[in-house]
Image (cartoon, rainbow, N blue to C red):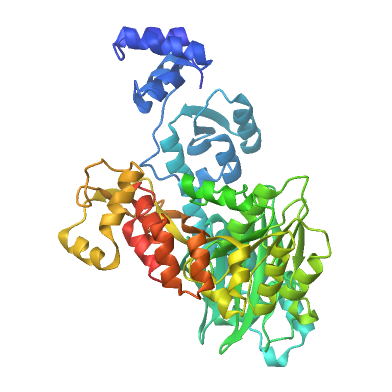
Length: 580
């Protein structure tokens, strides 16, 4: 909400809230930068936001409201739909007769006020509130959704007649899958998972129930338990959506479908597998409207980014990304492809599955059932005049040999390989019967990664106890860690491990576990002459790792400690993912 700068200045000086000279400096700065005086006061922290808010409201004659500790009646809250509330920063919180009081960040937003007035038929009374207050009120939509989620499932489940799989045809299952209760249940499960920022939905049949779990930030959480009688109908509904065979219950099936609304577009990858009590389904949620990643957002430090850029600027060679399933390897590959995606190059991929569609990239889906394997796909791609090739995964000696040949014949090849660390990729290629001299002459760089949960902004800090240091010394070279932290200028030059305040999670409403979101920890090996010599001697992963560390490689564990010291994650989280 805007207020005239001269008015604001006069009121501040009248009440003695800011020194006259300091305020004059802020006023000059506002004019120079084309900002309002209020913005500059907040930026320079000359006044607390709540004080400035009350002052602006007083000048404008508009009441203020703080909703941080207020529980809003659900019937009143939902007068303004959640998308409208979030988009326009407005929440309905009190109804008295025909008067609806609404909390807003900008009561001057007449267009939104008029819209609410027309849709609700009520007189709208704007009240000024702070961003913290508004966010607290917006969270109550989520609580409302959770309540509604349970109510819908209980109500709709009562209207479903159990399906006896052995006694029905595919037509019967299709009819059951299209019944309104089942449609609503599946839609609600998916919608709720999207709002929870879940990456996967697990639907697991048990003897007497159907368990639904969501994977959020890499950790599986129980979402709900449904009556066992719904299992076959829910499976049938998902099979219909993903165009799978309804009458196939003995073999695994894979499919895909999309969820599209005005605000989001999510591609959902479906995997169905028979288990003892029926069929288990895992849905992988892949948001198509998500903004493209950058190496910084993936967690690479500046020196690591420079190393990766040096590697991918080469016109020939192999760049490998390693790590276990679910460690974000494919996302890293897509990010590298996005960096390389220029008009002057032809980029082709062979993937299983294609997780994200990228404009101007020729993406091929592996289909083993018809003979289109990674090896066959890669062989065909080489006849498509590519400059850069991405192979989803090197799984066998045939694919490895073709990737090596592609690099030798003038192509840049990007791929993934399953190993625990960067050094392990080289012996793994040797296991695939690739000649050592071919590995040494083609592999340019190897990056390994894990995903750690990021700690919420509201957390505590504590120094390590003697007992904790004693345990850590058995797992980590603490002298090397403190040396790296000094080098990165995260701690003082003479600081030791006992001086550092390490973050600790603090569970809350926004972050039940004290964590929200994930970021990568990485290690990168650039193949030096000495490492190439070790490969030619069939050296072990340990020997290669030791040489890489001598040459300055920061390991994943050490990268994790750097991020913990920066307040991004915790030591416990780093140890959890690196010890898996």
